[in-house]
Image (tube, rainbow, N blue to C red; front, side, top):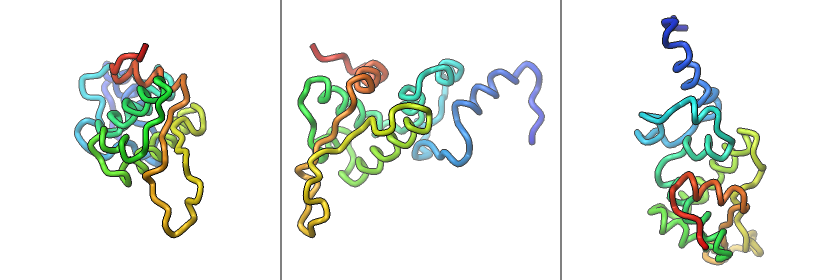
Length: 154
């Protein structure tokens, strides 16, 4: 334990609450995972989607924004296309989706906010992710679009 000066107690507690317990490893360790100049108290008081959005790296945020906009436009995005738009591989997108679902559920949000559909035949030896689509629940999609500044489709 490290003593904290009395005048820094609130910001330190806000940062600790934002970062979460050690078991909840957040982000990829990249520099854009820290709150930086952001208002940590605002992040702490935000809802589960906002806290999860702040906890992930930029590529995961891009993935979420692309899927959110497509979901709100009622145009489900194929998994490979969602990954391409985020600048990551399909495998990385799958990992990011798992991470986001765990973070949001761990923060008290819905248990499966990011869904992958089109998994019929997933146990077959010739299964490919090309036919899978990624969607976000509408309330989550609206919040992600706002957080990402992507603009809500008309």
